[in-house]
Length: 427
Image 1 (tube, rainbow, N blue to C red):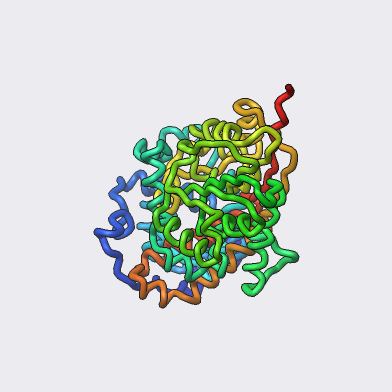
Image 2: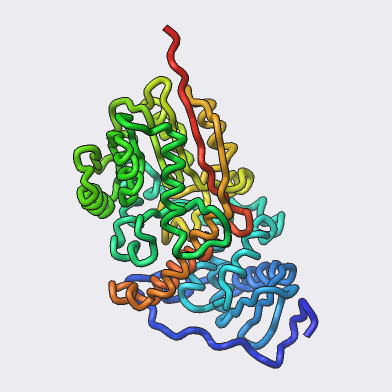
């Protein structure tokens, strides 16, 4: 058939996956939300208009095909698909995947096309009316000290065993830095150690350095800093992470050099020669970016260094969507918001005595890191199920990893390593 043709093809797509969706655990996935026929019809028209212009092959259950050719996307239940998007936008798009209403043989490739055209998917007139139709972030998800504890627990206290199934032996849950791309699973642990060592070098961590880590993870950075002879205070809001990090620190024989505290970054005290924070700013929220960077400033001794790793997005897209409630915020990272290079620079300039002295980006490395995690997660689906995570969860997690990978492959997302300094106070 001709590209973009809307007539039925001779080979309808494969049927939808069949699995039960628990209506108690997944109330918004179990059934599409109620929506008026006119609203659903408008959503269908907008969606189909966007799909016709994309380098995709979008195949509907009746064999109808849209798009200009490219990765295949099967829409098994068009009415439910359109109703969800009409009612909940991109949140509905993700929930529709979780429900098995659409699928893609190469999910990352299909999502990469969508990420590459993110700014053009919604017509300009509707973009200007975004405040009327876009879902708003719940006030309960604000990253206040109390809200942050709940938001962090939602993700990081799921299960240490779950994360151990798809992370490498370092249990590093952030982008690695590879020597070359593409990468293989056997290279991931070294890439994570290389990333960590590079951050410690940027912060000039050495023997007897006093180090503050904001965001413990599972303890890898604290262990490597302590192995250099540093004394480390690491802060986390995840009790699961803290427990395992302490076990790993003790197993490394470094318990006398590392303290792991269940503590909000705003509660930190003391001064340090180095402050390191790896992919934690994404959980801070725009409202609290000035507070976060002032904390880095206040905790850093004059002449000290900050090393920061941050995922970033385009500035104009952040400004347009920062009040919008997204699928990632609803299901993966409540209260999360990616900063931008411009926002970080402006916040540092306007709210601190710090100066950015170096910035390096590694977006392609994150795409590879996510690919390796996603493949590992898929390979171990049976073990994930054995931990008690159902098929809806596994589809959710697969979508999250693929969605994130697509963001980096398209260039929509990037990851930065920063070095910041605070000059000695003149006497």
